[in-house]
Length: 225
Image (spheres, rainbow, N blue to C red):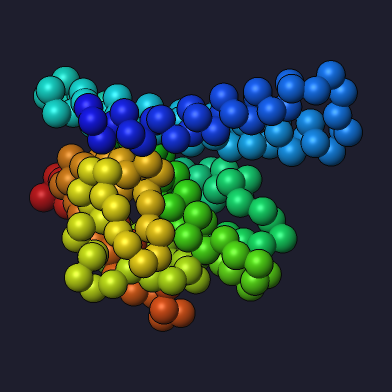
């Protein structure tokens, strides 16, 4: 609760201060109002993601979140998540590229997998954003044997080998690169979702030197086997 309170306090403080400063004068230029609303929207999005992750993990810890399995095409979910992710960062600063086979039939909890993918993509975008217009996030999926392998690379500073397990701890803080994962819950939640589906999420290094997250999920045929 102490960790959660600390994480929630920062965006709440930003929202309150931004609103108070903006309302401190009766009239401001249109650009200042737009800048204030952009700040409020960004912090509201961060708060919403944190609350969603907290609720998911709390229910999972209590054993009250059984998987709602259904049949769907994972490639369609990946496409949806990639399109959503493109709205999370400045389009002139971060490009989100995505490639996978035409169809990936899958069986699982589509809503949880959506939350997992969006958290991983949001994390990658957050740590790729810079003034360099070449910053990018790569999302690649392929079926290998009885598994679907999803790789998300970014062009950020990367994660030290000694920290690649620590980033999956709740409310983790890693000095040096300002590494944060959606309030410290996005990556733990992503790992829980993958493991609940019989899979895994691991951290590594991209060929660019940036961060890499690898999701491995068993296919429906593997489940039946």
